[in-house]
Amino acid sequence: MNDQPELGALSPVNLRTIWANEATDFTPWLAGNLELLAEALGIGGLTLLEQEHRVGSFCLDLLAQLDDGRIVAIENQLERSDHTHLGQCLTYAAGVGAYAIVWVLPALASEHRAALDWLNEHTDGEVHFFGVEIAVVQIGASLPAPVFNIVSRPNDWQKSVRTRNSTAFRDWSRGYKALGSLRDAEWTSIHALAELLGTSPGWVGRHFYNRRHDPETIRMFMDDGSIWKWMRHDADSPPSAGQLRDELANLGIVLDDNDRADPSDFMDSSALAARLASEELPPAQTGVE
View 1 (cartoon, rainbow, N blue to C red):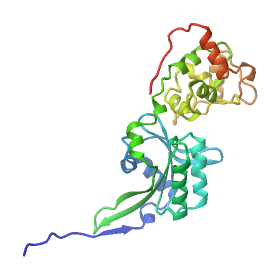
View 2: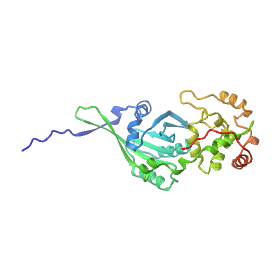
View 3: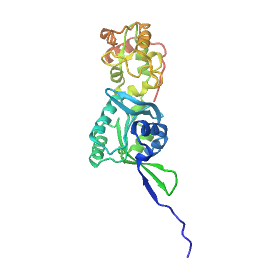
View 4: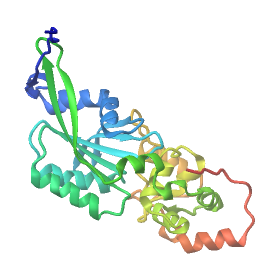
């Protein structure tokens, strides 16, 4: 009779013995180990942009991006899922224009898994919801090891990661030309550019996030004339309102006391299209995704 190999048995480890506190222990650990989460999700890269990113009165645990610049919002907790965190996930999806929302927690209740599955089935394919259960295991006296289990994901997720949404391949040269055509105090908005290009505001925001330091993008505002929150933004040193006001003033754009541009100088999608059709523009920077 052949000798059989001696095998150990996996034993679960209480998460609280590894991370005593969600905010000060678990979130920083996850921020430093996004490659493990990326591997579980089946994506090639996941880069941290900001920890504790403010969205209204809430704080998103981790704001990250894929290699192509698409935004991923990660909400984590050390307790079983609840309605509050589900609502926060929806808030973050809208607040940061997320391509994917990833909810990481020890146990996803059946009703919350059903909610994520329903969202994946009924949204337009430009946002994806994940429920990811995390456990820690060890064999004997070995070091504890984290294990991610994807319990809710969009249909055809792997295919969408490989092929990407067809709108991602849009030729952005028309958007750059439109921004380059703005004169003096003129400004436009993310929504106006989306209408001009025939895409969604989310895709415009995702594309220009990686180009937020380009000279042309300073004229891109929100619809109400407020400064786009990502403008010239760096996680370690976001610009002050005064810095942005000075840069805009050099272009003739003077903000009011509420830090909003003059609505009379707003160029909507129709005005931009007419401008592009009526004049020969100098060569503009182009970008194709």
